[in-house]
Image (tube, rainbow, N blue to C red):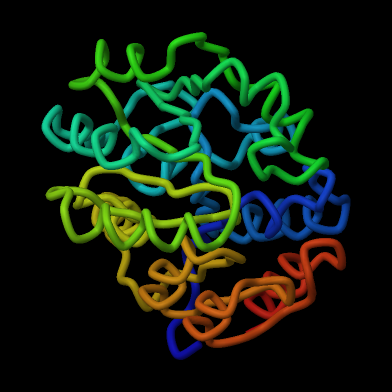
Length: 277
C-alpha cells in the first residue's frame, strides 16, 4: 500500500458478513475504528438497496453504497440515488428469449427493491440456493407469480435481472450465450445459482470510480474486500485488494492480499493492516 488508504469498499455476503449473514463484533469494531480515523467506508454489493442489513445500516459513519453490482450508487443516509444504470428494453427481451426454453427462475431489481418468482421464494433450494440463504431470500424478496410478465411490464425500469440456475453446466452455457448475443449488458456472478445481469457500464469498479471522483480521491487511496467473481474487478481496480480466504479463484487472483475467511473476521484483519501502515 504505497499511498495512505482513505476509502474502503466492502462486499457484504461471505466477506464482511459471516456465513449466517451477520456482522461480527470484531468486524464492527474495525469498521468503527476506520471511520474514526477518517476513512470512508463504502458498501459494494450485489444486493439491492432495500436488502441492506440492519447490522450495516446501524453504523452511522457508513454513508455510501454501491448496489446491484454497480448499477446504482446511493447516499444511504439521505436515500438519494446518485447514479443509476438501467437495462435497455431490448436487452431485457433478449435475456428472456434466450432463456425461455431453460429451467430457470428470475429475480429483478427496480429502484432498489428486489422481486423474485414466487416458486423460487417459496423453495430457494430447489433452484440451487444454499439452505443458509433461505431466510435472506424469503425476508427480502417480494414474490411475483408471473415473473416473466412482470419483467416485460417493467422492461425499461430494471437495474438488474438475476437468472437463477441450478447446475454449473447450465450456468456456463447461458453465460456464454448471453455474453455473445445480448448487447449492452454486464454479466457477473456472486453465488453459484445466479447469473447477475445489468447495464454494460455497471460493475463494482465502475461504482467505486464514480464515488472516488465525487470524493476527490485516487484509486490508489482505495482498499477493497471481496469474495466472489463479481468482486474481482473491484479488487483489481483498488490500490489494495483483499480477498477473504473463502473467495473464488477469480477473486483471489485479483487480490493483492489474502486475509482470513468471513467467519474468521478477515475484514477486521485487513482493516487493522491498513490502520497501522
